Image 1 (cartoon, rainbow, N blue to C red):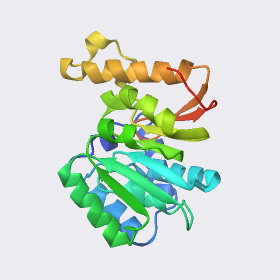
Image 2: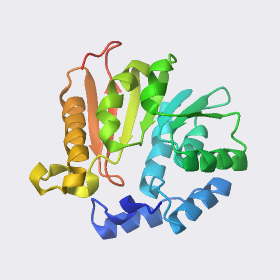
Image 3: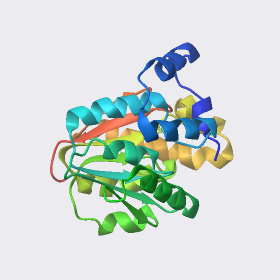
Length: 227
């Protein structure tokens, strides 16, 4: 459960500490959950990404959000604060331990009517969804990003935003494949394929941000996207 990402920043240590310590903390029970997760090194989005999400969603004002990778339910609970009275968050996870933790988080925060947790493989669940989402947050197995991309773009409304977390692999994303440990080469190759696809596609607009282990934001410019 150790949050390895928290220990491999892609920006200077001093700047990272500034972003994590000086920006506004979450209040209430959600803030307590964030502090507990950091103390126990449970993998949740780091605070600089939390603050960015708050700003971004405050501007986008999404009504329908889809998340791939619920973990303990922290990020979906955060996003649920920004969907409005009639909005909803749908999240997906396949790990029993995370499903149990996320369910407890939603109960603890009184969000059981605001967040729906779909249990199972995202590759099986995504094709069954037909709703259009204003915002999609993907934070799952990095080697699966390229596989999930077509379904994410199908489900994302035109002009909507797909935010993908942990794309820099601790800065190793730029290293030659032969310098990557053999056990991580498949992730390295597929993540590079994903980045190349979304950064060069004529009907997608993307921007990279050095938050946590790297974030990319992708906007869909046409109703139908061919990859």
